[in-house]
Length: 264
Image (cartoon, rainbow, N blue to C red; front, top):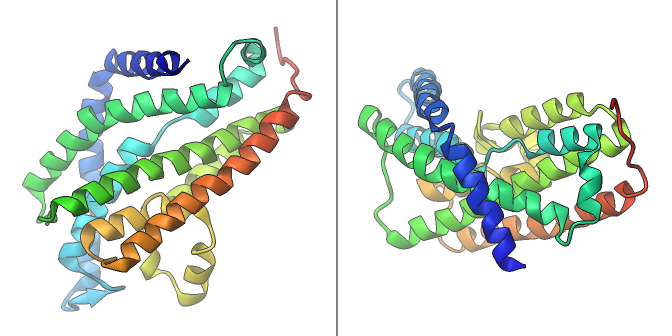
C-alpha cells in the first residue's frame, strides 16, 4: 500500500513537469512581488533600524523566504476536491482500496516536491542575485527551517482539504475557497509579518493555525525566533497538524452520507 502512495507522488510530479514552463514564468512573477515588497518596506523603515523586531535586512529575507516558501506549500486541492464532489467522480473513491484524503495529501506532496526543486530553489537563487538577502550560516537552522516548511505544507493542505470537503454540504463552496485563500495569505504573515499586527489582533492570530504556515518558519529562518523558542514554535506546528486531523475525519465520515451529483 505504501508503494501505491509513492506512485501517487511520482505521477503528480510528472504531471507538473509537463507544464513546467508555467512555473518558470511564475518565478518572474514572484520576483516582481518580492521586489515590490522590498521597496515598500524600505520606504517604511526609512531611518528606523528595527520595526516589529525585524531589521530591514531581516525583513528583506523574511519577504523572500515567505513567498518562495509559499511556492512549495501552495496547492489547489480544495478546488480539485470540490470539482470531484460536484461531478460525482468522488463516488468511486469510496470503493477503492486506499484512503481518499491521504491520496490527496500525497498528490499535494508530489506537487510540492516539484515546486521545491523547479520553483522555490531556482527562485531563491534568482532573488538572492537581485536583493540583499542574508542566508543563515548554521546548517542546523537550515534543517530546522525545512522541517518546519514541511509542516507548513501539511497544515495548509489540511485547511485546503477541509475547505474542499465543505462542497458536500454547500454544493458550491467557491466563496469559501476564496475567503480561505485570502485568510491564509493575510493571517499567516505572508503579506504582513504577525509581529507588525496590533497587540490585540496579534493575540488572536496566535490562537489560529495560520501563523504556523508562514510566519513561524520564516521568523526562525531570519533569526527573529531563536534558542528554545524555536522548539516551542515547532511544537505549535505539530499541535495544529494533530488538531486539524479531527475536523478532516469528522467531515469525511459525515460526507459519505451527503454525496449527490450536480449535472450529468
